[in-house]
Image (cartoon, rainbow over all chains, first blue to last red; front, side, top):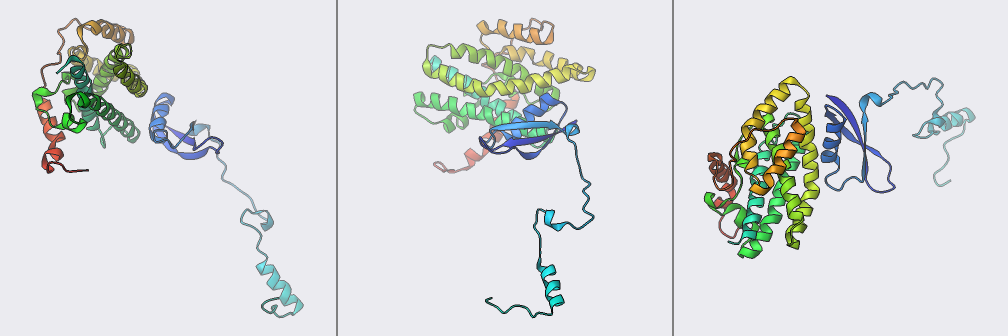
Length: 97
Length: 223
């Protein structure tokens, strides 16, 4: 049995998204099984089947220098602001300002 | 009962009973993916049965459920092939492929019918049956691809061949012979068909189970 990753397009213009995976002895079985599992309820306008061996996986990511501004979850300045205030000896700003 | 209604009931009964038999694999098919695929084929067959019963029901002034569930065993017109209970995968695939091959021949003839309603429903059913045939053919090819698979499939085909011939009327049988030979590369034996009109003992058990809920519900119950 081989594993095939299935991607589906929900409607014209939408991106392909991973739908799940199926186990099948070959590509012919995979096509039949993918049609049944991901294409019978009007949920897809197109499917892609990708043998799992064809997928290049990357899972090592280096971020040694704490370059937070590059991260997708944003750049928190709360900590740095607090440190800056302490250095300046300033009290926290009054509410409303 | 006119010839048209008899034809509709024969087609509908074949699809209903085979749909039921195929659904017996739900939960226990060889793999999860096959379970989904084969159950889906079973659902399609029952959908076809419903559409065919509805056409017959209009002429008989009744409804599809009454035709599916309220007749006596003798009134069913299904072919013995679909009635057999053979919960063994090679036999299931052999029956599935023989039936789909015969059904394709029958649907082609119906699509050429002068009766626009029959031609129309045959065309509509055919659009789903294409996928059933793809499924059946891929399994036959896979079984033929190994010694064990070929041995088990051949044995099942020998056993079921007289029943397969019985699905079709005389005039369409030569075409089934031709198609089966083309696929297997050998001619099937010349045997007497197990034709429509008699029933296998297993049909009684199937009908008991299939009509259980219907019989237990008070008349006029709505679902």
